[in-house]
Length: 120
Image (cartoon, rainbow, N blue to C red; front, side):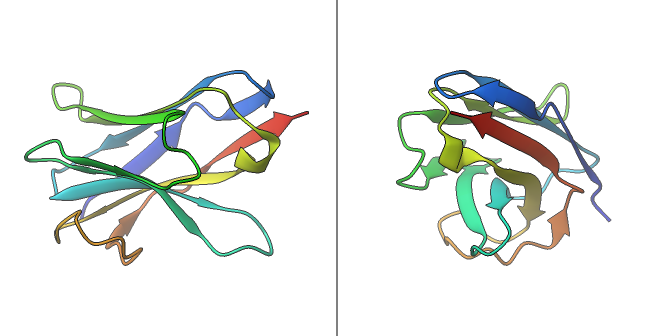
């Protein structure tokens, strides 16, 4: 059983930056950040292939967010720059053993989430 624990959320003004982190207990093939807002569908923000490092981003965050891994620290990061009010959401860390090339949100393991709030 892979355990994921997020941290680093908070409040920031539009245009600012935040970095959220996710520590994991075991490696899988694909890790991702998924965000959820009440009344909206969940959105896969970014994914990273743990083996080769390939990354994938939603169009809504491309050029502003960066997903990365520090395997020595067993930590996944999401650096969020140029934040917008529409980025406000609960951000979840997720992992699965299937490939990252699929944009499916079918992940086997989920963290508890960390709230990010962007004010205008």
